[in-house]
Image 1: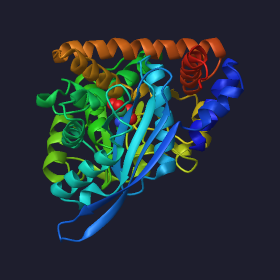
Image 2: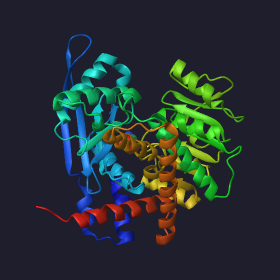
Image 3: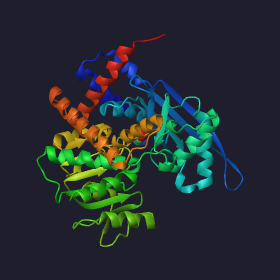
Image 4: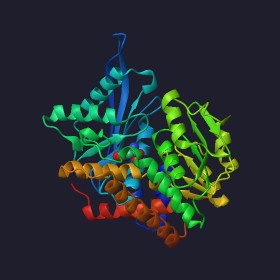
Length: 409
Ligand code: GLU
């Protein structure tokens, strides 16, 4: 959490919005911890811990995903809720920031157990979520099916079908076309705009992707389709490398079939650290927090980093990236494609409309490219790096709304 707070503090100082706003934004408005008893496949009861943290809603209803992860705790969810406030503000969405999580390992749970966890968790947080209050979405190890269970449980509690309470749903249940690939596409757009800003072309540009999950695989696919050469990819089981470039669509198939990138045709196995240190043009960290840290940052050779994960770079590593002159597209900008399409999904649900995929994708692209240039403009205005600029811009926007609302009661 301290990592995010440091950046917010800097944003407040640089922009001069007023020192008192640091205290104001330092604490989330609501932190909820719930216990989730679940009957497991062997008939025994296991109790999981769940969280929903609502950081700030000055710009609109709280918004943010729910992650299912073995080490998730209140501190992590709080930091991620804060990041959502600033992420939504950078892309200028009318949302505040929230995050949720359940401390569990979905890889060891059956589908039925996951469903029971999801329904009980939803029941426990039902009072504080809602279409105009707080709208959850997928995050690490949660998907459209989990969102469908959440929507159904909530709808049954309030007694009416309420698709607009959650985004990232399956398309037949009111999910948006393009939501599944949205975050990865946004990360690819971030990389592409940075490459452009450095006056480089996309053709043959070498890319390494750390974390070949939903975000990383789609980012790789789009970059591959635009002519880049994706030379390395990794997931929780290990990494692979092929200097000639990986066939990304075939790698996605391989991962679907085997559950890992390892063993892909014509590739050599490499470690996570080796992947981060490859001589590439673009590095896409899209796994979890803190993988670019004091230990790993020294060997990084990429010219552009587009951050698919939330918080992949620690503050001390960030300083080194700055000294090295690496162009960083910070997480709150680079991975905002997901929440942007979530917003479009919510708008479609509220208006009972269904937009074609091309419309969703082109609207998202417009928003992200505008945000990219807003951040570059802010970086020039305050003479700061791109990450600080993203925070300056979003802190300014959040504080503007906070000031206009005033304090009541
Ligand atoms: N979990 C995603 C994120 O961190 C998406 C959130 C959303 O769509 O609300 O941005």
